[in-house]
Image (cartoon, rainbow, N blue to C red):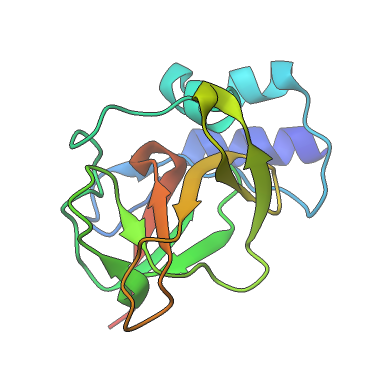
Amino acid sequence: MKYFVLLLLLNFGFVNCKGNQPIKTHAMEKNQNTSEEQWREILTPEEYFVLRQKGTERPFTGEYNDFYEKGSYHCAACNQKLFDSNTKFDSHCGWPSFDQAIKGSVKYIKDLSHGMVRTEVVCSNCNGHLGHVFPDGPQETTGERYCMNSISLKFQSEEK
């Protein structure tokens, strides 16, 4: 039954802040066990590469790198709210940057790949890879820079 409801939601789609483009969202229950095969069916190949295989998009190419509308950023896989737009800043790194995540919305994982020690950031609901957090953010706020992949995020505008 849940799979049928998910298919209905995907077929009808949702509308983003521009009002004319469908946003693929994936209604998921907390801690739902979704197989990798199901993720491949649900996500686009690009979303799957980043969210499930811990890939990254090229710098300065993501939809939200130079985007500053008021609203919130949600996980592209499960639609969990992750960041408020008032925490977004221009770090000039080529990816959307935030100085803090919504409390409880993300998990942190030690990442030793590529010969570095980093902290990976994943969605706390679906474990989708979002990006990394670094200690070089704005010192007047948190000092943290959440360097996220645009493809891992979906923006929802504030209601007016």
